[in-house]
Amino acid sequence: MIKMVPLAQIDPQAVESLLDRAFGTDRRARTAYRIRGGTDPIAELSFAAVREDGALAGTIQCWPVSLLCDEGGAIPLNMVGPVAVEPEWQQEGIGRALMERMLAAVPDCRTPGCDALMLIGDPEYYERFFGFTAERTGRWRLPGPFEPRRLLARGCNVPDCAGMLGPRIRQAA
Image 1 (cartoon, rainbow, N blue to C red):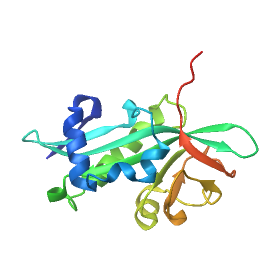
Image 2 (image 1 turned 45 degrees about the vertical axis):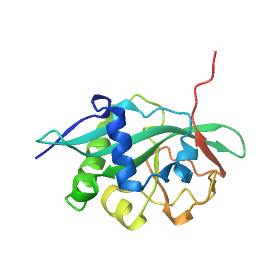
Image 3 (image 1 turned 135 degrees about the horizontal axis):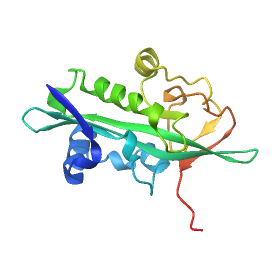
Image 4 (image 1 turned 135 degrees about the vertical axis):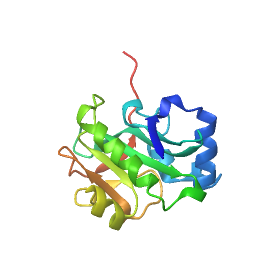
């Protein structure tokens, strides 16, 4: 039995260790880390899957990002991922359950960008099960290498402009 809890209840070092096991210790060099650099996960959309014995089985994090449109304006989006599952427990539906839990929280989300989610992932999986597509992401640029077919989004306010995706960092008043 898996229990879903807010990620904030989990020791951050346990999360980092899980991410290293799931994605490798070189994971920080990936483009996704540049997109969300300098931001903190969105607490209301970030969860952990915990087994009955208390072991951390998986996590999902979401991050505040923005698309800076070439014609002007910054559109808030929330970046989904990483979705990490302990390697020995992969293929047991934990990642899918984490995605479903996060998506169930979206209607009550107060963070800007909850109506425009994006991720970098397998289009065959994320479109089939969760409705993410590359329909409006074709003119987006990222701060590093990526496969355009894997840049996916969903939501009523996903922008269809050309622009650069990057972290949404609060500006001092």
